Image (tube, rainbow, N blue to C red; front, top):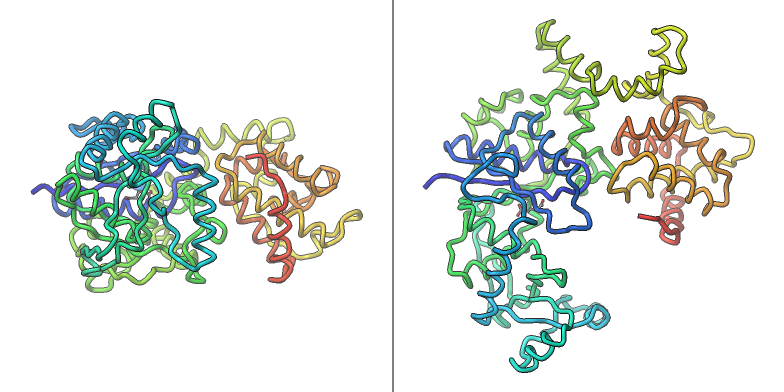
Length: 494
Ligand code: GLU
């Protein structure tokens, strides 16, 4: 049997370090077994998926040196490799399930489902579909379909009994069926849900081992049922521990930079990032900390992955990157520096910002220092302003950060429009509103244009600087909670 692994990222937002982590382990496992590693794009959420994000995933993985044998851009025998291009296949499989009575049409309205959920929550029960449409007569179903009533298709789940499955790292896991929802398989827009698509695709793409995040463990009973309904063998399951922030919470962009692009732009080396990710839940048998991809392939043992959540620690990663940088010969180091920032693409983004502001070429340096390097450390006095009280400064920073956190795309004009809107909602003049943002982003009251700076820095770094500014201003937990509440009352355009 040829080992075939895959990752199946959704092309929404920036390429996540969690995706890079999954890619690394799947890639190493496949390479170690002389197998194949497949990149599949899960773009069934049409509203959120973008081609820019798909392209960013390709770029991030290429930068890391994790190549794939089949994918949207690499032809293979099991394509297409974008779920949006596999709609027909899913529809056929939904029909098979309906024909075998393993699935049923559901016509329940959102209002009805919300009511059922609220009642279950009030009664402290597991929230799940109550089976309202599970036993409609064939005539009624036909009539309602013919009348064009909006519907979804749900899978049947046994009413009693337990589901037992095996995870290679955790052994047998048992979950009672009473906790499993009659999952929607086909949405009202005709697109499959993740649960249907992942099973159909993993089967048709001959995936032998699924290495993915442990957040999917609870979905396995649904998948196992689908495999049995289709009468297919199930791939081996290896659920990797989730990466965590230093406070043990799940790694999130609210607390940590999570975009691979951020690490590239900050001058981390792909070798160092891969090495560091390789230590997340795994270690060399001899505890050697620095190792190359090839060394990891040689020594990798999937059964030695630990299931306790590894901490993604910036300081450790920085230390490791330093080790790599110092180990380079001078020519390679020089090449890395120019590839990092003094390359055509980055310079092309900087030049229009600085050219009209410079009298000498060397003026470039003080103008762009906060864009290519760290911004200077701040202290609370930096935010003194003749018209703004501390509370207003904090509010601007906090609310803007909340708005940034909600952004799926990071576009200059959209960021500008959102700040404008937020300033209005805060009843402030835009000029005053932008002052704390200038300080937080550039460390200066006057700098290169703010919105161009944000775009150049990218979402992660911009958010990180606002977070840091809030820290500098010593915002208490209580104050933060009050502001979080206030944000919920605001309207964000996206
Ligand atoms: N799209 C899912 C994710 O990115 C894939 C999960 C899986 O690997 O099955 O988390």
